[in-house]
Amino acid sequence: MNGQLMRCAILGLFTLLVLAAVARAGKIVVQLPDGEKATSAMIARNDDNNVSEGKIEGQRVTFDAVGPDSTHTAQIILQSGTVLQGVDLTWYTEAPKKKDAGKLTADDIRQILAVTTDIKSFYSSTEIIQLHGDHDRAVGLVRLIRDGGFYNDKGGEIIWRMEVWYFKFQYGGWEKVQQSNKVLRRERFRDRAEYEAATKHLKYVPELGGISLGEAEKERVIELTSDSGKENPPKVEEEEEE
Image (tube, rainbow, N blue to C red; front, side):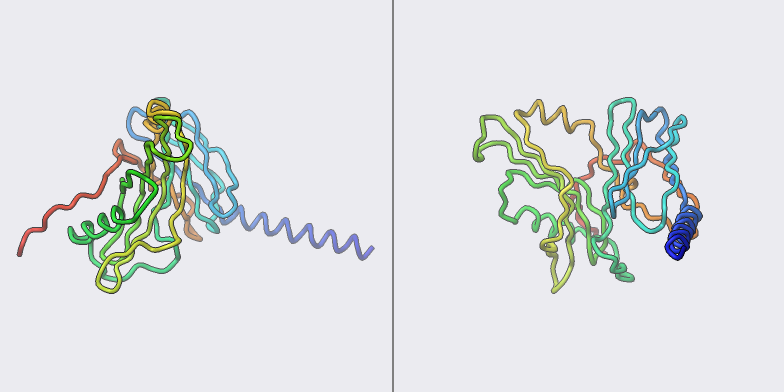
């Protein structure tokens, strides 16, 4: 009898926890650009990779039962074949932003680009295609390509990686934060045609990555534009003298 009571108590506690989680859960609504429609949509919890499907209604995609206890990353595939892949370009720890850090300056960008290209690497090309941050710290989406001359290369092969790198301004200059980069994808292609076919429709969209709802937040609306996920390599623009 005691065992049965214990099982009932555990079941009751589990039910309460489930109901509490459901009550705290909200939803994420993604508004697609004009003229775009989705064919599939999914969202994953970043802590356990639990995946659920989104509900597609015209140009809107809704992800229900999104809890505040984890960040989430979404992927939406459009009728055109374009893949909108969420990517988390927030800082790699929960350390708050430095107050009044100021915007990235031309010199900041120049130093970050120098740090990126000065690193000795197996890859023949290392390029930041998106950069977000301020004068204290920055996060870059980095594309790395090795297009020949590596072990077991059968001629024309390409090794491709997408990573997230973290940069910090300290001791009077910018540095790459070591042993913190995140590998998003790594693939080896037989030739450039295969590489182009696999990557030309892929867009990494920060708005769809690292999504975290507040405790009392019941709905988050994310409005995408035709420029969402567009490659935007940082360029050094000379600052005007005051």
